[in-house]
Image (cartoon, rainbow, N blue to C red; front, side, top):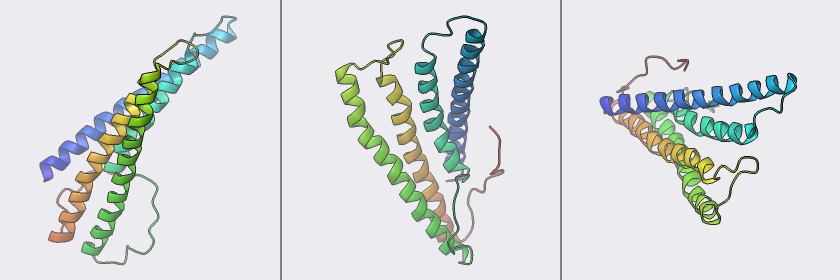
Length: 175
């Protein structure tokens, strides 16, 4: 289980780095477009389309990293006083809800993505196929759902054994 969890951490880390790179690209395109416009040029054709695609990719590729590092905003509503095993059960339930949400986003997104693909929708400025926007969303949603199931298993193992089987080295790691 520990090896499997470590592989999940590595996969989430790589997805997070790719998502951060997409955010960097979005920022660079925007800054370059602004600089060109300020110098009297026409800017970069398709900056909005490219930036939107990169932001969607950034969001859905970094979500798994947030789950695996437990770095989402959370509110402790009274479980910190519970014994370790009870805390683990509560965390497993919360993670299961997160997995269900991400699976639902992916599942219902498939219908929308297939409609977009069927209609052949394209972006307004440079005509990017709109299905490209759905690939990172669907991939990120399903990857997150699968990853969170690994987290659920970890919490259930803690609930059964009473000890953490795969403690993270650093929860505040910077990509």
